[in-house]
Amino acid sequence: EAAVTQSPRSKVAVTGGKVTLSCHQTNNHDYMYWYRQDTGHGLRLIHYSYVADSTEKGDIPDGYKASRPSQENFSLILELASLSQTAVYFCASSRDNERLFFGHGTKLSVL
Amino acid sequence: GDSVTQTEGQVALSEEDFLTIHCNYSASGYPALFWYVQYPGEGPQFLFRASRDKEKGSSRGFEATYDKGTTSFHLRKASVQESDSAVYYCALGSSNTNKVVFGTGTRLQVLP
Image 1: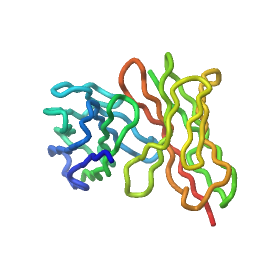
Image 2 (image 1 turned 45 degrees about the vertical axis):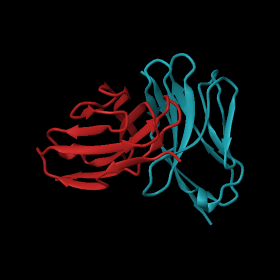
Image 3 (image 1 turned 30 degrees about the horizontal axis):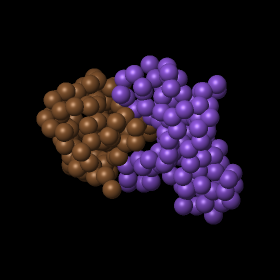
């Protein structure tokens, strides 16, 4: 079974602080994705990547950066966290842009 | 851009009722279409997919048929159980951009 591990599982951050969410996959998948989940909005794509050292903007990239230093690792960076970025964040991987395997999510609270 | 619309935000049914959750999409070409299910405290899980017109996907008693004419991929199940209570997401895989775009989700509550 495919494995996607997110860390931390939950985090409390202060407004204006820097936050880094990490994702590690052991599936040998080329594609990795970051989504945020909010009530009423479902899952919205922030950034994605289909090769190491390259990232692409998703549908809501403003206020977020992404980094893919290796095939296995994909980070989401909030340089200046804001209240509106309080949400649950999911990382996913896939062999192509077909079946996605998700992590358990990171609950981020910005105060 | 590509998008997925789920019209029902919440659905409440009794056990053994028939389920329909509507999904319509907007995309060029022939995107792959998916259904995912999410249980509390977990990430979404793949349920099934379809990639061409009139193809039916199915799993665990759930099914949906790819309809390019009506740009739909409605989820159906003949007889729901309490254990089916979860959030269901329709999604599409863009053939142009490598994105996977999700709908807003439908929360299904099945009462015993």
